[in-house]
Length: 107
Image (cartoon, rainbow, N blue to C red):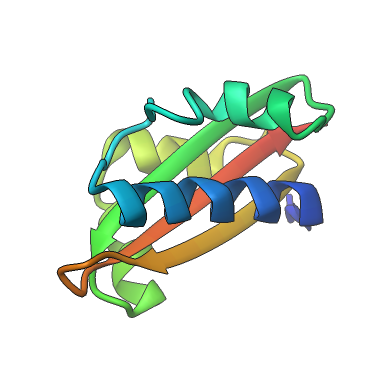
């Protein structure tokens, strides 16, 4: 089924992309914002489940999605029928690489 856009998930995805770009981290667990669940909680987002996909490289979102679809874990997030909402964020790090973040929510 189609995922609904979520302004709350967009905000969390952007916060996470910005932190990765600013600090040089590329991880699902960040020093300032912890896990995606920690970030969702800090921003008061209501959810029953969450997932996160991250990609670092090209600024082209098609390349990011292609990379995710060619990775079993990332593909599983994209195709997970339990997720109902999606948020996206992107930021550019000091080396010029783009970090794309998808946050999936089950509401």
